[in-house]
Figure (cartoon, rainbow, N blue to C red):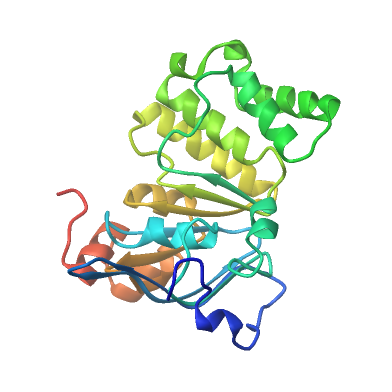
Length: 267
């Protein structure tokens, strides 16, 4: 497949989508091809994320979680299969998908040359808000995410927890239908991690659909309505944390994962 060419599956028969589905994938695949080798990062992924749920992709580094989010958020072009977000094909209509999603990547992508408030305000302007509404929304989010005391601070002056809260605030500025969180608490201290968990719960309680990746067992157990355990680019098991533990006869998600993969994420 040449660069920029849609995979043939994109032109296939429309997917069957239930009204409750915010994300649907069918045979979603991504293969990275080098001169000497090929890497199948995501292999025939089939999943459905329902509106209003927190859905977790749980697995080690290299499992395919970030590549999956990359395809669902239009940053990575699939080499096979299809994906719909909010009923919109991510390959056919990437601009329309971007307007309906919020994304918090693993790395800090805040603009370090402007203030905390300006990072939010200009994001709103980018999405077409007029000056007054953009200022009002900025203030609302600064208060909600407990950032008012750092309103005029530069990004490099923020703690890791504050920077992550600002990234989440920016991601939900335009009221996205789906919020993607890629390893949202990596590198945070325990107190900041718990504070971010509470924000995720609050957003979800208001109806926000959230897809998150994580390699923290406790995080998946505490936050996710359903979890897909991934390894080697494939889904090995899918269900609620309680279902996964009951079906496998294991007491924790950690032992479920070890039983499925033979790997211990603590190592």
